[in-house]
Length: 77
Image (cartoon, rainbow, N blue to C red; front, side, top):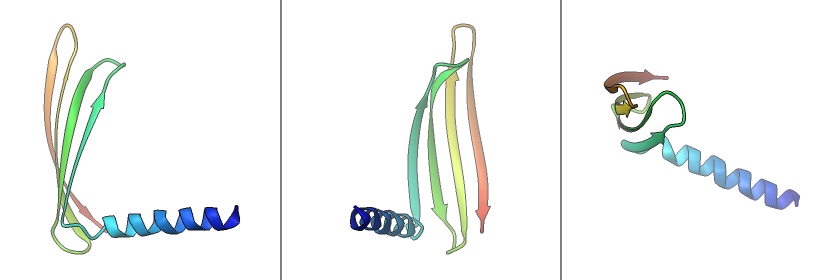
């Protein structure tokens, strides 16, 4: 059991470390159940090893209105 947990931890840490070196990242999300139902798409581009830019676009709707949002962010470590 101890070996299995160590193996899972090793694979998880390796996957997280490898994810930090990709120059581009794309993600999506659906949400609902609250005031709004909608979707969001996110794009990240690595500028250097420690700096990234991110662009998020989302839209939501409900019975009486809808919304659209576009957000840009700069990440540094």
